[in-house]
Length: 327
Image 1 (cartoon, rainbow, N blue to C red):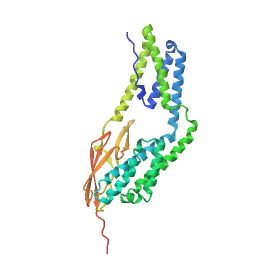
Image 2: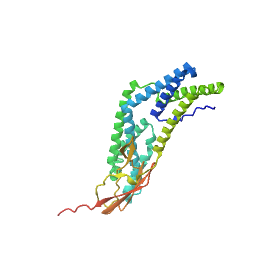
Image 3: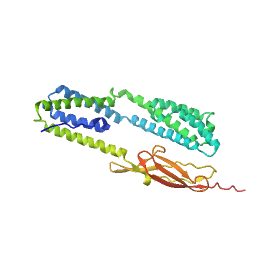
């Protein structure tokens, strides 16, 4: 009989699954410690799993770490939306608006793809962008495109991020000395050392007595590999936005210029057998094009999915004439 240990796709396991796998794997090694006959290797593995558990639990308790990531995601979305709006206005029929958009877009492009910059660099650059956008050099262009609220929201979120980042620094006093990535690597290596030893013992001495360990270990690997692939499948599954929810768009006043409304779009997702509303982000999850969005009447928005979202959704809104003044 040939016994062979299955290979866990351990590098790709999610944080909680990675720790849970090692906790189960160590318990199994402890069960067969007499056969493994390497107390030092088992002790090293035990310490590695304990360290990963401590780091993981600290991260789970870290309220501000989660807030920091969420706030960064929000300011990233606003930054991307400003870029998308500027790209739309660069094609405006009104030369003055086109010129304003080009001027602002040159400033925007100067700061680059901030969504992929490190936290500190992004904070400094957004602060610089907001200061310039509010300055007398660029304020007229911002006003011409009615982007003042977007700029103020970006500044607000950047200030909020700085506040959360300061709170994160204060809670670092009890931060573990080892990063989660390093703790994961150490646990992986410790297990690898043990499984190589077991493989060698089976090769040298034969499979007698090892079928129990191999069967249990392989069942454990299969279970966690399946969890990984199920998660990967859910993560990359395509979602058709045809049935998405779109918030009602209030009537817009006729100005003689195209009306650009960014709709609020959300889809229903099921997590742990519970339906939840998941808002979509403009440019990241969907794009929009318009029809009949100048004159009074019914305007149409074509919402098209991007990335993991596919399909198209069509909604309408009304453009109404400005009321005549009496007298």
